Length: 114
Image 1 (cartoon, rainbow, N blue to C red):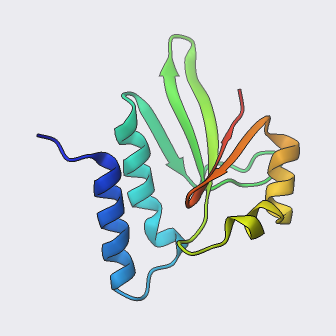
Image 2 (image 1 turned 180 degrees about the horizontal axis):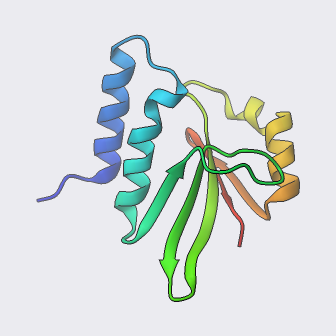
């Protein structure tokens, strides 16, 4: 039986945190693997090209008949970062003005541009 992708993600984050020197970017490969494991054909690109409202940490896309389609953008925040503070940040204000659907949940901020 295949491991639950969310459980794998949680264990890898915990392992990185136990090392005592993890920072937000330490978790990017683990988050990328989680995103790509949740839906077939989805690609999560870390540090994509800047867009008008800034530079979210990830762009999530999928190949379609007419080419690659952007499903949304993600802004990751470090474990322990208070989302109330993130919600009020200048960074998220820029993202809200430039991206139509923005959701802050857990340790990542998700924005769909469609």
